[in-house]
Length: 264
Ligand SMILES: Nc1ncnc2c1ncn2[C@@H]1O[C@H](COP(=O)(O)OP(=O)(O)OP(=O)(O)O)[C@@H](O)[C@H]1O
Image 1 (cartoon, rainbow, N blue to C red):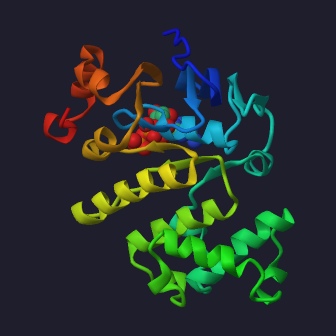
Image 2 (cartoon, helix red, strand yellow):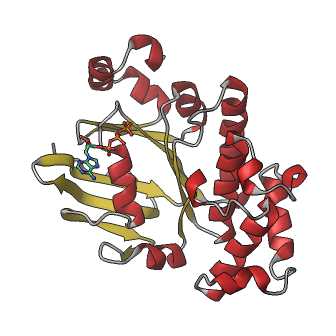
């Protein structure tokens, strides 16, 4: 399915014809989207739709079989993940990427220090401990983690680890933040808090955020626009009302998800 771009002004991210094949498996086929520089965009679709693969193609974790990725007008299709990060394309860290033996504060401070210096070295933990401390404190406050400042990352709750992963990503001062299922494994209350936090971050930091999310109340509640993938293809992009009313979206979802999961 050919997918014309949908945006009108100043896209920070443009994918064109993005395709990923794993041998015979076509994970993504010809995906073209534009994300505006102040946009909160959700990517949704049933299991196996190609969402995570698409994210990995954007971040530079996976090379694409075909197609291009432009970030801030620059072709980054062949740029490695670090180069994209330097340009301002950030992705939240997963729990298994944290420094478990270090405190919450040190995890964020070192991320800020690494971003400033340009590379990570194990020396960073022994450097002057107040380097980038203000920035780290500010981020902890913003992510509601100040109370856990001195807790070792391994002792954090699941939800706090997810927030720490976002704080680390923000330490690199991204202009576009990618969040892969930020509410997964959370109960209803933490999910709601995380959704508000994501919206707050976009509004206050004035950045673009693209998230993969399964919780439809989160998606419908905070997204400016939603992109629906199904079986590796782009089905639709539009505001929540448009997506809710789209018959093709309902069919795609009802084919792959239970109606009660959908809440469309
Ligand atoms: N490394 C890989 N090798 C082979 N096939 C893969 C690989 N990664 C993903 N796939 C396949 O590509 C398709 C898309 O997978 P992907 O994980 O991107 O979907 P998804 O929409 O993120 O699914 P979920 O919601 O379950 O995370 C699936 O058929 C999957 O089995």
